[in-house]
Length: 145
Image (tube, rainbow, N blue to C red; front, side, top):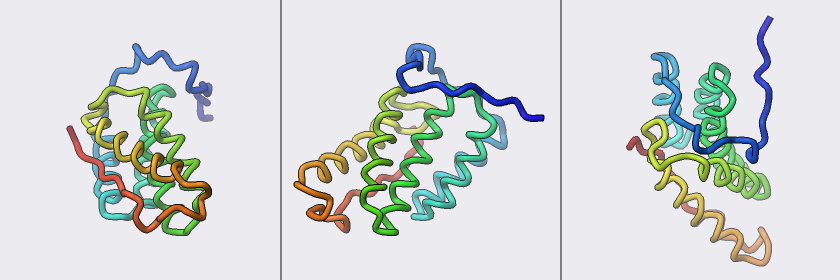
């Protein structure tokens, strides 16, 4: 029988208490594999790698993993030309990344967030999703801090 971790909304997260959880060897391997896949444009596969960590982690730490997973989902949706999905996932990514310090789990969160912010600005500056230059949308890369 598995133990279900209670869910929290973003507003219930104590940002002062968000310290990096300790990555075990399997977690570190999945994080690195996910980053390599993501930076190689294999967004669905990156999502799957990070989801493995997400399943093993406590709820508050999972919000960071959710941000990475949602960013991968945004770019997967971009490849499929599901533009509303891109917008929704980018917004969710932005909300979650803002909760974390600039180098959470040795990921350069500040640079990642800047790219997401620029992408959302480019999308939201247009009258409609049909007016967005989706081919010109900046694609983030994940760097370790």
